[in-house]
Image (cartoon, rainbow, N blue to C red):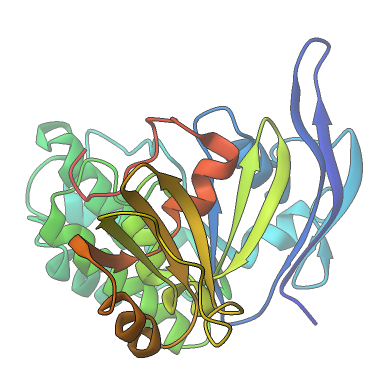
Length: 301
C-alpha cells in the first residue's frame, strides 16, 4: 500500500482555485518531488495533507489515516519542514533541538545534534542571533531527526550555500536508504533531479505532469550547427532520436538511448559545433511553465 494516497483533492476559495482535482500516490521508501512556481498549489497541497486546511472535495490518506478526519495520527507519522520555519528566538540552538526532541515521540537529541554538525551549525548561538541560513539548518536538523515514516520538506535548501545544499541532498538519500519516504518541494531543478525518484509538476492548482526520474537521466540533448540541410534520420535512429528544433543551421536533437550510434551518424555530417548535455527536467518543466523564472537550474539563487 502506498504511504501517501491522494484522490481528487481540491481546495477552492470564493475567487481562487488553490488546488483542483489532484490525484497521486507516493510509495514507501520513495523521494517524491513537487515542482511548480509560487502559487502553483504546492504549499496548499502540503497543508491539506497535514490537516491544517480542509479540502473542498476529495480525500487523502497517509499511512492509512484520513488526512482530514485523523489529522493528529497523520502528523504523528510525519515530520514537516515548512517553507518559513518559525523557531523560538529566545532559545539557543541546542535548546531548540532538545525541545523538538521532547515533543516528538521517538525523538533522539543526539541524532539531531549529529545532523546539525553535518550541516556545520553552531548550536551555542541564540536563535535570535542566527542568520536566515543558520535558522534553516536548525529547522532541517529538527525535522530530519524525528523518527517518522514520512518527511515533508518544503524548500529545504532555501538560503543555504551550495556546499550545505549538497549535504542536504545526501541526508535525503540516507533517509530513503533507511526506508523513509520524503516529499521534496524545491525551486532548484538540479537538486530535484539529483535526489528525487519521481516528480509531479503543478500549474495553477492542477497536477499537469508526472515524471519518473530514472528514464529521464538517460536522455541527452544535442545542440549542433550544420552547414547545409540536415538529412533525415537513419531508420535505425528514428525510434530513439527526435528533432526538437530546426532553425536555419541550428538543430536540437534529443535521444533516450545509447549515444554512440547517434554520434556516429553526426560524425558524417558537415558540423560546425556540437554540444551534448543531459536533457534533465528543464525541457519538460518549460512545456508547462515556459519562461518561469522562479525555478532555477543552478544552485545559485
